[in-house]
Every structure is written in structure tokens, then in C-alpha cells.
Amino acid sequence: MQPKEQLYQPGILEPVPAVARFVSFTLADPSVDAAAIKEALTRLTPLVDGSAVVLGIGPSLVRALGAEIPELHEFPDFSREGVKVPSTPGPLWCWVRGEDLGHLLHHTRKVQKALAPAFHVRHVVDGFRHAMGESGHGRDLTGFEDGTENPKGEDAEEAAFAQGKGEGVDGSSYVAVQQWVHDLDAFEALGDMERDHHFGRRLSDNEEIEDAPETAHVKRTAQESFDPEAFVLRRSMPWMMSMQAGLMFVAFGKSHAAFEAQMRRMAGHDDGVVDALFRISKPVNGAYYWCPPMREDRLDLRGLGLGLS
Image (cartoon, rainbow, N blue to C red; front, side, top):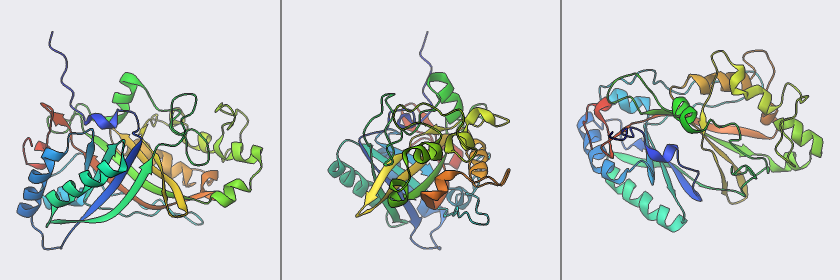
């Protein structure tokens, strides 16, 4: 029996790397047309193996190519009184992954040159894997493990990748990307119990606290508590620049629906209860991208009308 062909970009399921770069690109000029965009993507795709580089395409770029991807749309503004959740959409995003920042710099430069002159780099954030927890998950800079409730195995594939939507879309993933800036002074000013109650877990052993307040992050985002259940595959990483630091939140899903359900509840849209996380951290940007599938170990861009890379 032939093994089932892997249709997804493998880096999405692979463990979080030691270091990574989150690079967003913008069109160099509003006059850049579909032909120039296609030429740039044709040059780029040989550099995208789905592992060392994971590619995401924004809704605006899909429209510019005259294509349509089911359920893809721009990142909504989830802000409400007292809570700011900005939407900063972009046309193209790359998650450059590896073990050495120097290698990532050179790889990023290759990507940049392949996309020029149609695209310019808009924003770069360097991320890293922080001290591993006992369960094998990296830690946030607060010390709490990130991704404890991630689905595993076939459940992870079910949560992260589109299925039953046709060739060129099956195996793709819808990713939400947000840069959160931590107020570490505010976090460090909390007592031990307050810190645990902000997250809904004990820092000492990562165990969930049953009687944590309703504002606890774990309670606001419990994936099985939604109807339908809202499972995503988190691949977040800490970041720092000078003395500013936080978390690059990255969540892959079979659509954007699960992330949106969680974000709405975090911001208090459902019941007016705001996630305690907003007291010690805030998002400064947010965007959605579509991560095309793979076929025959190459990026499959048929959904964009470009065929295989």
C-alpha cells in the first residue's frame, strides 16, 4: 500500500524551533499588478519547503490574483470598551525556522530578494524557544508553559488543516498571527497566587486550577467549552527587542472560526468578562493568512491559479 501523500506544510506540525523569524511583507506600490505578483511568487516558491520556511498568503493578495479561498477573510477588529485588539492585515507572511539566527538572516535575505521588487519587508520579529517545561512545551517569558492543550497526532491534523474543500485547498491551513507585548513589571508585581489565577494554572507544576476565577486565561479559552469545540494548533514563540518583549501568538486552524471564538470570548464579547491576560499583556498587531498545501513535496498554489511551484 502506498503511504498517504502529505498535503500540508510540515513545519506547521513540527516542534517549535530553537529560533525563528516572523516576516511580513507588503506590496511595494499599489500599482503592482497580478502579473508582477505571480512572477514574485514563482521566484519565491523554490525557497519554501514548508519546513524551514512556512508561507502564508493574505486575503488582499488572494483578491489581487483574482482568486478565492473558502472562508478566508481579513482579521476582524475584536476591540471593545477597555480592550484593544488591533487588526493590521498584510498580503504575505513567512515563518522562517531554524537553529541559528545567522542562518535565518541569510534565508530571510534570499526570500526578500526573490520577492523584490514587487514586495517590501514590512515587519520582522525574531522569536526563540524559551526554557522547556516538563511536558515538552516551550515556556512563555512569564514562565508558564505555552501550548499545553494543543491537540496531538490525528487530532492536531484535524484541527489545523482544511479537509473536504477540494484540490488546491485540502491540506492548507488558516493561521492567525498576533504580536503581544508583555508588561513584565506588572506581572512581577503580582503575588504567586495572583499569577496562577491570571493563567488558571499553577506555575510550579502546570496543573489547571479548578477554582480559578472566570477571568483566568485557561477558562476563557478552554477549547472544548465552545459549541462547536474551538481547537487550534498553537505554535507561539517568545520574542524580544532591546528591553521590550512578549509572545508571538501563532495559531493554525482548518478555518479561522476556532480562533475567532476564542478571541471574542477573551475580549469579553460573549459575557462581558475580559481575560486576565489583558492586564499584563496587549496585542499590537493581528493578521490572518492562508498557508497553501503541498503536493509532491512542492508548494501547491493551484488555489491561487498558479499551479504547482
